[in-house]
View (tube, one colour):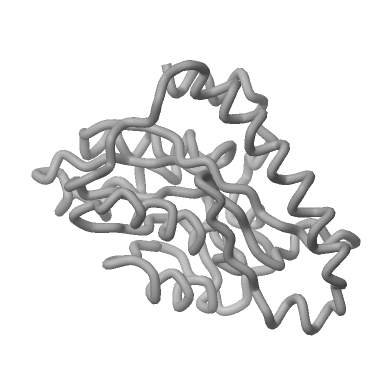
Amino acid sequence: MTYPDRTAAGRVLGARLEHLRASMPLVLGLPRGGVPVAAAVRSVIGGDLDILLVRKLGVPWQPELAMGAIGEQGVRVLNPDVIRHTGVSRAELARVERLERAELERRLAVWRGSGGPVPIGGRTAIIVDDGMATGATVVVACRVVRLHQPARVVVAVPVSSSEAVHRAAGEADEVVCPLVPPDLGGVGTAYRDFHQLADEEVSVLLA
């Protein structure tokens, strides 16, 4: 199965989340790619839409390979297997984290401004991304959300590796993923249109 684009994938995902409609969920898109998916999910099941800011910590010479991720409020999760296999040093990890922390703060200023997030406490929070390769980013997203004491944490993605589904299941109350190929070459292979979103596209969706 190949999705035409992120919006189409979000509609497919929304159909798998109909059982959560009555809870008036809070749908949290991970910028940038998860936001159009989340907006489409919300159009199907209702509730509220917001962003959840996390940043992947990519291996310096292979940025798409996540050695961990960071989120708001200083949360960090590392992938020890990737760090050990690639031989990333502490100094290299610290440098990547410093750069990604600066980008996270920039995005906070762009998309949050002087406003705050939609309150999560006591709600069903659905964390949405356009896909999971290692699951590191979604794991840290779950931990950020847990700090706000939601009633339930659901991870919902259109495509994922089986490894990432397993990792997310250890953090979330439920994982929903319609497409788990036996060998995920990359999240983008599941989409015909997988363009890099601009900040303005995300702002329009959130508005």
